[in-house]
Amino acid sequence: MANTPQSQKRARQAERRTLVNKARRSRIRTYLRKVEEAIAAGDAEAAKAALQAAQPELMRGVTRGVYHKNTAARKMSRLSARVKAVAAQ
Image (cartoon, rainbow, N blue to C red; front, side, top):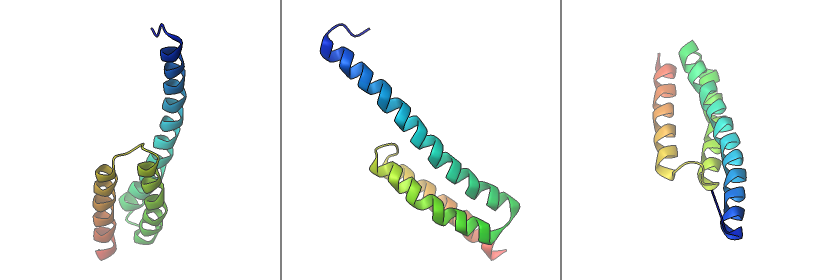
């Protein structure tokens, strides 16, 4: 465990940041799940709308340091390709 006052403070800060980041990651996953569900249902319009809503959330996660930029870009690319495939059917 942390012994010095500085390391104790850093441990407290890390605990708070972990909770905030966990909430942000959960929120982003919810948006991504809505896209996945619309794709699974074969509803192209709902999938497109859900993707439009998920994109800014995912990018906000990048800005806040929850996700790496390339990770978010990869997720968006794969999701948009799947939404496009559903729309083509």
